[in-house]
Length: 116
Image (cartoon, rainbow, N blue to C red; front, side, top):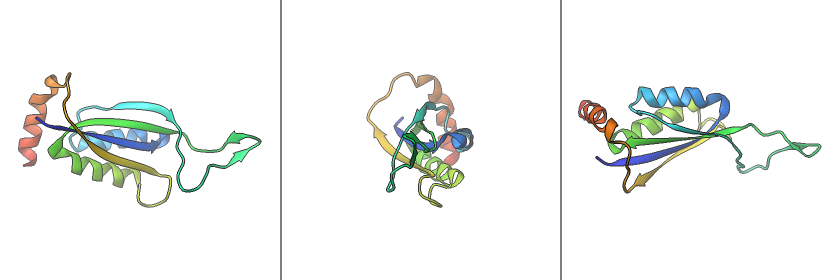
């Protein structure tokens, strides 16, 4: 079984929505790295040296390759990533190898067979 890693950078108030949306589309789990900071085209505003930016979370999904595109599109829609700057970004990268996921392979095999 081959995997891809979806990395989503989301506003912290949308993290739960992104997690539930990904699960609905076949993701079997995630890792959330809280309180990340990012900067887009425009620099963040400050007030008396304090940053006024919204906190972000980094959400990592290790998913079976056949499910990746539908999960990626679904979380993009749920997070409204293309509607306004700074709402979030999601991307996928190839995973050459992974360990510790064998307990999920049986469930993933059924899900992929249903999708195909």
